Length: 213
Ligand SMILES: C[S@@+](CC[C@H](N)C(=O)[O-])C[C@H]1O[C@@H](n2cnc3c(N)ncnc32)[C@H](O)[C@@H]1O
Image 1 (cartoon, rainbow, N blue to C red):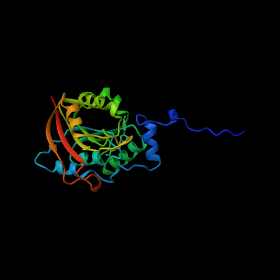
Image 2: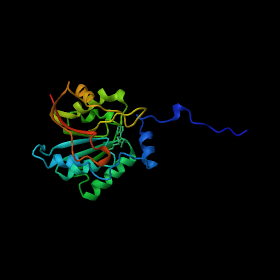
Image 3: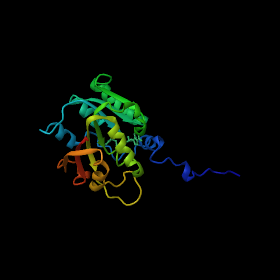
Image 4: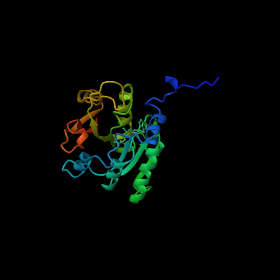
């Protein structure tokens, strides 16, 4: 008798696993992919409120559009992601721009295992990584960001404020949760509802810059 093995739930990679994300890249299921940097980041970098270039860690960098934008504005960027396809795409962009290994670096690693980089960055860049991780890990994510930063470092973030029923990713994110989660270790310097979000996210984004206390 031919017995077909049916995947048990325990065989299904969960959102914490690299296999989950790499599987999406392999199957071209990347609905978060904008094909370019997110406009509010460029607006910020050209605004009077911009921050001086420094060392920035891009967490869950995906295919690297935002990381490349910051590199093009003079930042020294280290782009972290655990999915090989994401890292390969980011590396290719950095290589093409001539910045790879000079002011743009890629590291394939789990963002919850970055202890060796603690205190090394002036800035952390967040864009749809927070809503991609399991909500149970959000406080740990806040600790990761805090610990990566130098004492006066800043988190530059574009949050996707989603109210979703059912399971993610992306998982629901609310403004009040962000304030609750980050206020213990961070001061909110800029809180801004962008007017130049991509059409699908209009009215659903929040741009913040926070400083470590
Ligand atoms: C929704 S995508 C966002 C990508 C990119 N930031 C963007 O906005 O286009 C989330 C990314 O985070 C990565 N990721 C999720 N959990 C991770 C983890 N624990 N460590 C490293 N990367 C992670 C995934 O591989 C994926 O590339």
